[in-house]
Length: 105
Image 1 (spheres, rainbow, N blue to C red):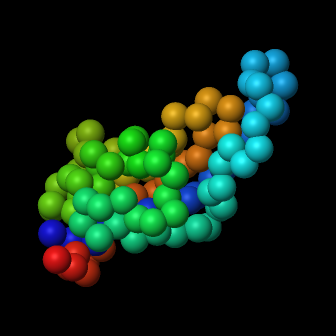
Image 2 (spheres, one colour):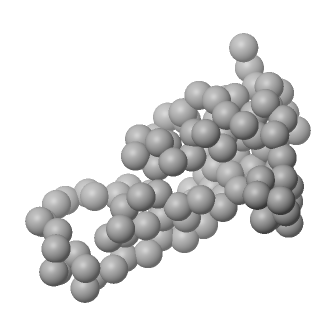
Protein backbone atom coordinates (compact mmCIF):
# COMPACT_ATOMS: atom_id res chain seq x y z
CA UNK A 1 0.00 0.00 0.00
CA UNK A 2 1.28 3.50 -0.90
CA UNK A 3 0.99 6.94 0.62
CA UNK A 4 -1.20 9.44 -1.23
CA UNK A 5 -0.61 13.20 -1.47
CA UNK A 6 -3.66 15.49 -1.36
CA UNK A 7 -3.05 19.09 -2.43
CA UNK A 8 -5.52 21.97 -2.32
CA UNK A 9 -5.32 23.38 -5.85
CA UNK A 10 -8.13 25.93 -5.93
CA UNK A 11 -10.70 27.38 -3.57
CA UNK A 12 -13.65 29.26 -5.06
CA UNK A 13 -16.25 31.39 -3.28
CA UNK A 14 -19.64 32.01 -4.89
CA UNK A 15 -20.58 35.12 -2.90
CA UNK A 16 -23.85 35.61 -4.82
CA UNK A 17 -25.07 32.14 -3.86
CA UNK A 18 -23.94 32.58 -0.26
CA UNK A 19 -25.79 35.91 0.01
CA UNK A 20 -28.95 34.46 -1.53
CA UNK A 21 -29.16 31.05 0.15
CA UNK A 22 -26.78 30.40 3.02
CA UNK A 23 -27.33 31.19 6.66
CA UNK A 24 -24.28 33.03 8.06
CA UNK A 25 -21.61 30.67 9.36
CA UNK A 26 -18.11 31.31 10.62
CA UNK A 27 -15.17 29.18 9.55
CA UNK A 28 -17.08 27.30 6.87
CA UNK A 29 -13.85 26.12 5.22
CA UNK A 30 -10.34 26.12 6.63
CA UNK A 31 -8.60 24.81 3.50
CA UNK A 32 -5.99 27.05 1.82
CA UNK A 33 -4.62 26.85 -1.73
CA UNK A 34 -1.26 25.08 -1.76
CA UNK A 35 -1.99 23.22 1.48
CA UNK A 36 -0.89 19.60 1.26
CA UNK A 37 -1.75 16.47 3.22
CA UNK A 38 -0.32 12.97 3.10
CA UNK A 39 -2.68 10.05 3.52
CA UNK A 40 -0.96 7.04 5.03
CA UNK A 41 -2.64 4.49 2.82
CA UNK A 42 -6.40 4.89 3.11
CA UNK A 43 -6.39 6.80 6.44
CA UNK A 44 -7.72 10.40 6.51
CA UNK A 45 -4.89 12.84 7.19
CA UNK A 46 -5.24 14.96 10.31
CA UNK A 47 -6.57 18.42 9.49
CA UNK A 48 -8.25 17.44 6.23
CA UNK A 49 -11.91 18.47 6.08
CA UNK A 50 -14.15 15.49 6.88
CA UNK A 51 -16.69 16.49 4.23
CA UNK A 52 -13.97 16.64 1.57
CA UNK A 53 -12.69 13.26 2.76
CA UNK A 54 -16.09 11.74 1.96
CA UNK A 55 -15.48 12.65 -1.71
CA UNK A 56 -11.74 11.93 -1.82
CA UNK A 57 -11.56 8.69 0.18
CA UNK A 58 -12.69 6.24 -2.54
CA UNK A 59 -9.97 7.58 -4.86
CA UNK A 60 -7.36 7.65 -2.06
CA UNK A 61 -8.24 4.04 -1.24
CA UNK A 62 -7.94 3.00 -4.88
CA UNK A 63 -4.68 4.89 -5.51
CA UNK A 64 -3.08 3.62 -2.32
CA UNK A 65 -3.76 0.07 -3.51
CA UNK A 66 -2.30 0.59 -6.99
CA UNK A 67 -5.30 1.66 -9.08
CA UNK A 68 -4.61 3.99 -12.00
CA UNK A 69 -6.07 5.46 -15.17
CA UNK A 70 -9.48 6.47 -13.84
CA UNK A 71 -12.14 7.04 -16.50
CA UNK A 72 -9.99 5.81 -19.41
CA UNK A 73 -7.25 8.41 -19.52
CA UNK A 74 -8.86 11.37 -17.78
CA UNK A 75 -5.63 12.53 -16.09
CA UNK A 76 -2.18 13.05 -17.65
CA UNK A 77 -0.69 11.38 -14.57
CA UNK A 78 -2.52 8.05 -14.51
CA UNK A 79 -1.92 7.70 -10.76
CA UNK A 80 -3.85 10.86 -9.87
CA UNK A 81 -7.30 12.45 -9.79
CA UNK A 82 -8.62 16.04 -9.64
CA UNK A 83 -11.65 16.16 -7.35
CA UNK A 84 -13.79 18.80 -5.66
CA UNK A 85 -15.61 18.82 -2.37
CA UNK A 86 -19.38 19.01 -2.39
CA UNK A 87 -19.76 22.54 -0.95
CA UNK A 88 -21.72 24.41 -3.61
CA UNK A 89 -20.97 27.78 -2.01
CA UNK A 90 -17.18 27.46 -1.73
CA UNK A 91 -15.95 24.39 -3.62
CA UNK A 92 -12.36 23.31 -3.14
CA UNK A 93 -10.46 21.40 -5.84
CA UNK A 94 -7.96 18.77 -4.71
CA UNK A 95 -5.20 17.00 -6.65
CA UNK A 96 -4.89 13.45 -5.29
CA UNK A 97 -1.69 11.61 -6.28
CA UNK A 98 -0.24 8.21 -5.43
CA UNK A 99 3.28 8.48 -4.07
CA UNK A 100 6.12 6.01 -4.52
CA UNK A 101 6.57 5.84 -0.73
CA UNK A 102 5.05 2.89 1.08
CA UNK A 103 2.43 3.56 3.74
CA UNK A 104 3.41 2.90 7.32
CA UNK A 105 1.72 -0.03 9.03
